[in-house]
Length: 392
Image (cartoon, rainbow, N blue to C red):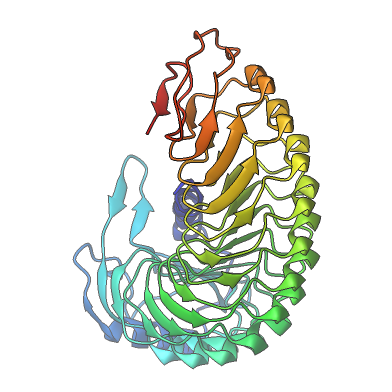
């Protein structure tokens, strides 16, 4: 995903910064040095020698790669990702081992990146909850298992947390969400997490991105999600989430991406969707949504709309013709009936799939000037010879 790629690029840039720059005027604090050496002692394999400069006889603030200190000699940044850059190359490597609980003694740590090491195993030590100054926290793309520690409720200054692409299980600790009002980005995707999305998510008032796809979350989407006014990216796809899409979701006027596909959602698409004035990418396929498309959909600025494999019905609203920025429209395998609105001629879609519905009639010519086509009976519809178009 582009979302994850941007995080990896950010990590590379931060690695360059913290591997070559230190703020210290004092020698490394002995508590911090001991914590880092204990971390190194639990690493079994380090093929590219990410920790080769970590020696007891040298100053961790001056000579240890991936470590930066404040003016008082306390470690503030620990950056040893498996994806990193040098002046002329990008390296993709790994380390095998467990995360030492002693890292919790780095009490002034602000930035921790052990992402993409691929083979960090075991559980996340609850002692990391002692890092009360931490603002950026990356443990993604490893093989960590067990629960998210409840002690993370003490990470009240956290702005970004990515624990994705691991083997974590259990629920999201409700107490953790109660305290993270500064959290802007939360990535927990591709784990084995379960339970419901806590209603206490409403406390994440600074949240702009939440990605928890590819887990086993169930129950319904809490209506309190509508209070997160800064959200621009929501991916809850590929879970077991049930119930309806709450009307309150229409209050997220900054939302750019909404992925709820491959769940067990029921009910109608809320009429409040018209409030999603910034929404560009919407995927709701592979659910059990019913009813018709709200006419208010024409007030949106969508570029991609995918609603395949639901139980939607009724006639297609003429307001779809107002979606002039739409490049992908896929409504296959539903129960839509009636004729295709003449307003479709306003569209300039590149991908169109209306197959396996009960639509009849002719497709109006599109803006791209391809000639109109027709289709027969109850099968479905594919429009003019677009770059990507499917018929039943």
